[in-house]
Length: 298
Length: 298
View 1 (cartoon, helix red, strand yellow):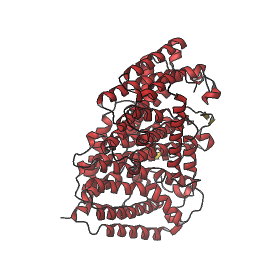
View 2 (spheres, rainbow over the protein chains, first blue to last red):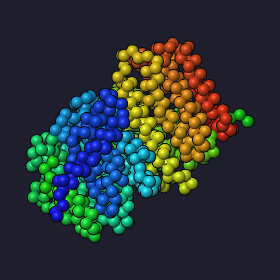
View 3 (cartoon, rainbow over the protein chains, first blue to last red):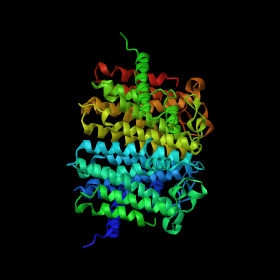
View 4 (spheres, chains in turn purple, orange):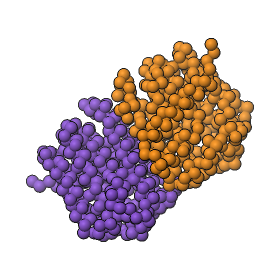
């Protein structure tokens, strides 16, 4: 029987959404801060990072319940970064995932604090004893926290964001563009896969394979993101297109043209697949996820 | 020989500053983000939270090197909260620790990201294997991360900050004021003391004593903070005074009057001291720190 990716994606998305909901339900209702956190967190994202984390764990023999909270923490960090990136002082975006951005729906102070709170909550969830599994070593949880914080921090996602802001209207070359994206998007995608690997009990060579898989997947993801900003449908994307051009941002299509960009994305996916070609059948979701990145519409 | 608190404070402050400097030196120089992080982190704070963490560890038989990185992580979280609180969308302050605030010295986007990066770096430091000591259990490090993230998050510091913003110009009663301060300031002070206790190897009854000590110390600290906003010297404080009155913020002096506020602070310090009266001589720094809160000028 063929593997049903769309069924897999909806099942995992539901598991992630339910767990996020459960975590948020632990807090007092109708507080403005919690309402804003929930608003952005439950705005219907693809849940790519949590699903990658779960799929990576499963690929090395782990089970979804062992990584579900870690997966949710990754989505919290991703969402916080979107809230802060959208702020007037940054990208000044009004629309995200088809809805008004957090500072539009609430206000700027609440959006800043909701972002801060989601980032902080991610680490609380990662270190929460009742979310941890007995047969996973404490050292592995620490290692996951270390990898994720590093990927999200001043040498990872935040470094990428500041370079992104600084490079608006500035001509950068392909190497600088790749370094910027590797920091801004690639690092957290890689950490998502590696966190799944660690908690799923990956052997050393499996971890190496996962790292290479993730690096190439992150690249493919970023190239297709730039392509969607040119060719995508704003109704499906849930955000405006053509914004990179308008903001004079360097992108893969701008530097390489659309066709060469598509070739790059395809090559990166091939490399991702090759990196895990020694994995067994349990890695099928990871493989299909990589192929999915090429044909995604949002 | 009498215990020399001012010598203790300067020695510990130097140890914290040196370690913060060492951590920041691990990053590429002359990057705008790192420069902004360093600017706010090294602006000459009192280092109260890190010193409390070290003193609590020492009080139960721990040593400074066992907690110095944790102490630094606490200062990073405190500094991030100041950077974000000072933003135009929040308190809109121009001056902090006697210097232009981060968004004035840099710009708003950089200040938001520098805050985000310091918060994230705190968790990276807490989970960094090379900063950890062999004879401390991994479980204890996880427990420290959990306590600190909880104190800093949407039920702690950030909850307090949003309530603080919401209560400008609104009459709140003493109970609401205490709950707000307990969340905004008290929770992280408590976490600082408890983190020191955990890593210092405190027994259960010592942890209970430290928790009560910290709760009372946090209260005393907040009351004296409000008093300094009325009676303090802006040159020593490094920030403007009279701002609470101007912003129509509810404060202890506004609700209780200056004299009654001073009595409250004194009573809280007495309770803090009583909570650790069964500790031995190694708790002398903790005791002196509590007394110091009453007579501090900044």
